[in-house]
Image (cartoon, rainbow, N blue to C red; front, side, top):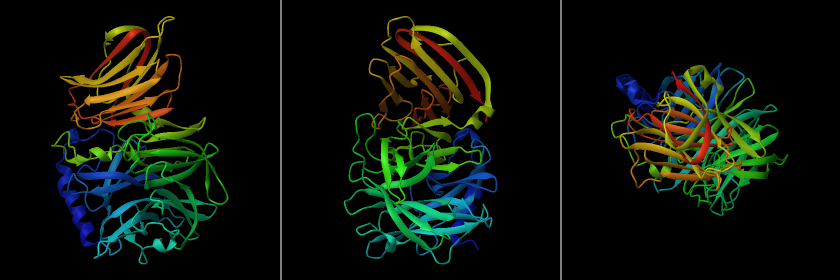
Length: 489
């Protein structure tokens, strides 16, 4: 039976979402359509469709007591809106249904596991892990929630910061990783195990920050890929580290080997996404053997800024991406299903650029654009710039410096105010002046994939849609190849 709070949320959606013009929404990036969203939740395959839930306040474009919004897709590109799935309507989650995950059970039910937040009268807070069972639309919370409480924490573990369970099944057992704040004031990932997804025991601390990579580690995800064990976390209060990690809430990928004791032996560590807007990623395995990732395309430090006050939503997800591990790094590429929506191919080969130029047919704001740059002759050009979303005082610029081996993205004229972090520079592998950048553009976003996905970088941008120009600038002679498709979605 639906609670009063869940019925209220669904009634609000039914009343307000049909009134929203599609022209105000991204074409192919998930939003709440109304209200606020943040972390992706419950990214899972259920009855042949991919379900995605998300942290959600339907009533306002600002964060408030969290619900779970809900969409589904067959191809990661076209999404169908479903009714709000969870509301904070029980004593153990009355202050929020925080992030979690989902899995299809052998009996055909869809299991959600999430963090319930309860604040006490004396100001204390408890975060516990709770279950809900459903059919892909309607979910009933487990009568004996919570199933993982602070009683299972290691000594000194915080009951205030104990959240974001990610579930999977392995060798007939259910496994969950959660984030936890440890006694040293920094984050760790805990591993739990169960025979029935109801009764749990703690196995290990998979990895810990030890005050090296920020404090609380949110939204962990642990999986095996290409023969390696991969742990994704989202650290809070990162100090920043040159060009590798940004200050504040960011992301971290740890690659190594998970021992029989449930402890990860780390081999490499790096950021997941080199943009300004990427947080709380979650992955799903596909039947054809892929691992697909999606994340919240927003930076926590700028959530109070509304570049376009008239939009009915706040927050959007990245384009889903396929993952691989190569040479100790996470490789990311747009899901291959995007190619089914590409139209109107325009290509150029061996175009010499020295100064600023535009090319006929190269423009737009719903695009899949690949630019490959290399030196024209024996002399190395000093820099190469791609300008997108250009027009009437707007532009977002991507500059490559071959001598420094860096890419610098400048979105200060993309609709954001000047007091927001608008510049992001990161190092790329030295290829003697050669670089390939794939751009995915939507109404309110730009995602970059550098050198075949060796690095990805995500940015929310808000120029008017008429700003659809694209130009190229080179200091010194460069040769470029271009392939552009419009995205008909």
